[in-house]
Length: 155
Length: 470
Image 1 (cartoon, each protein chain N blue to C red):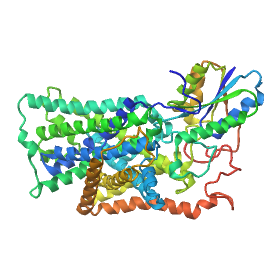
Image 2 (cartoon, rainbow over the protein chains, first blue to last red):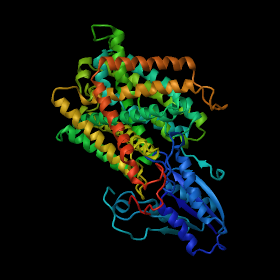
Image 3 (cartoon, chains in turn red, blue):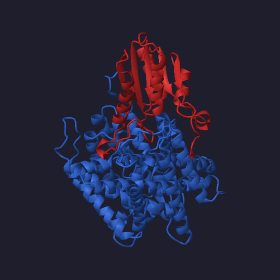
């Protein structure tokens, strides 16, 4: 089986990648594709929370941020068994994740869902929701475990 | 299409999309907002001001195209100047100048939006409309609707349609034989005609701004070395031709003093009732088109502001809070809130000044934007020339050196003119720069308190909470 693991650079997406490893049988998984999607017209095309190092102005590159997030997530599966592929795409995240799943004939998609509450239900809907809606295969949505109450701030 | 090799970016911005991105971004600023002011400064010949402004901006666009094909990164001007001069202070100055230009442009555009809005519904006070407008755009940006390339293209089509209506009216007028072409060479000013044109160019220049935001998508452009120069310059030339034709139409169909005094000058062309369509319907339709056009460009400037703040926070030159990304929406929400507050403050200050009898907010903030951008554009051209011979490959686009020198002189002359003609704009320039410097000082003094002793500025915090920023 080919598994597509999506990362948006969030810590939650790393947690999702680890979740797969917790319960899945590496002998049944042949390939894992770790994918990051850049959003060309967004305020921040790709933010990598997994690497907080200071960047010089020459190094500020959304593509580099996506590469580093994919590498960080891919590192989760080092020595686990399945062959790991790294993919970076550009466009609408949900659409590109599904396209990739289609093109590799994925048997499972792993995505994270970072927040609860108003913004992802009332407004446009989250990437995770859209992936669930249109995926060609089962989807594992890894939600954050409840923690201390949300701090103040918008959205 | 076969899959791109592993780890390679599968790009999504085609030349056509980039062309419409540039065209939409350029068209929305300026001509809807400022045409009356330019007409007032020059007279019937004000199309010349647009033609000259467009030419200088397009030459600057060539420098951008050359640099983008060398360094396809989103950082734009700041990156080029850093590569050319390796001077941290200058890079910082360029970055905050760009940020300030973007703030001022948003303020000017929001005020222009309110003027067209008042044509449809004049009950709410203009200040309220401008602030709500900026607020809504910030929220839209936070949600991420701006990311749709389809929406972006649709808005550009609407913008072009609005200007096609104007050109159609002009053509109708000419065909009916009512046009007096002598208007096109008339100057209202008593003094030197060249000065009149320069004054107009300085204002008209605002109409060309926005093209520099094309660097935003440099990284994700398919075959950038071929696509970028074509789409960028093509978009600018297309915008320029439309501008000149629209300016001529306005000059032919409406008396110049009426244009100059109008809050929403392009509406005056529609109001002349030249084509056999009810004026009321056309007025509302056209006001809506103008609002969509202005919205498109303002959206890009709001995106640019939060992007610059995010980049600076990653470099640790402004407080790290600006790099905070909402975990689900992946938007830099702190930057969006901050940008909203700054633009709202500009609008309030502008409103107070207008009430005290000062100059109109639209052209005041447009002038401030132009001051910042002329400075940046001139430096970008110098950087392009200085970086000649470095990082060049066979596919690097190479702009004509002679043209670049002409562009450099053009930018410098305009900058000098604007500053000498209107020294009070420097107060605004200083105020906006102070915001950037203030953020740097806050980061410098307090930034270290975010992290435990002994850790370098910007080093990740291993104890960072998983859901930090939620």
